[in-house]
Length: 340
Image (cartoon, rainbow, N blue to C red; front, side, top):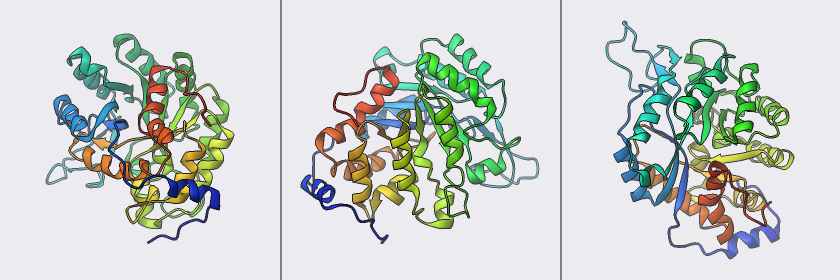
C-alpha cells in the first residue's frame, strides 16, 4: 500500500463527508482509440455496445497514428507494438478509416462520438497540412486533435524518425490551427523517463502551454505511463507538478485515464484523498477516460474504477468531471458557472 500524502483537516473533512456509495452516474469517455497499432478495430457496433454497458453517453474517439511493422524476420505477427524490436511508422490513413466508420453511423449514434485527428508525424512541419486536409475532406466529422504521441518511452524508442516532444517546432502551426478552429488537443507527453526520478520533460509541456495560451490542451493520463510505473512505481512529484501547471496555465486540462487511475487516483482500490482534494480544487479541469485500443470490452471495468473515485467527490464536481467538462471542451461551450 502506498503512503498517502497528508492533506489539511478541512479538505479531509470534505472528502469523508461524501457518501462512500452512490448510484452509478452517466459519464463521457475522453480517450478511446478506435484502431490499434495494426489499424484494426472491433468496430463501431462493438464500441457503442460497450458504451451502453459501461454507462458512457459520449466518447472521444481517435485512430492510432502509428503502424507496427511485421518484419520479414519475425516468425509471427507481433500482437502489440512492444511485441518485438520491429519499428513503427506514422500512418495517416488512420483518420480516414475513423471518419468513414463514423459517417456510416445513424445520426443519433454520431452525436455520441467526437472524432479527433491523429494521423500525422509530430516532428514533420507538414503535419498541419494533414490536419487541414482532414478538416476539408471531412468537415462535419472532427471535434479535436490527438492523441499526439510525444515522449512515450518504449513506443518512442521503437518509432522511426526524430524524437517527438510537446514543444517541437513542427507542432507550432498545429497548435495555432487548433486555437483558430477551437479544437482541443489531446497530448501524450510523459512527465519523465523510465529511470529519472524527476519531472524530466515537464518543461517541454510548459513551453507549449505558455507559447499557445489560446490552445486548450488535454494532458493524457497526467503524464503517467505504464512503462515508467513498472520501473519506478509511484512518481512522488506527479501530483505536485499537475497542481502547479493547473495553477499557472488555465488552458490545461487533465485526462484521468489508463495508468493514472490504478496507480494514483486509487490506493489499494480506494480513492486517494490528496487526488480527491486536487480535483475538488480544479473541478472544471479534469476529464475521465478508458484509453482503450481497438477493443472495448474493458470499458465497463474502467467505469467501475472511475466510479469509486467519483463517489468521493462533491456531487457537483463529480458531474463535471464525469461528463460536463468534456462536453464543454468538444462542443465549444462556456464552462459551468462557479468553476475553479
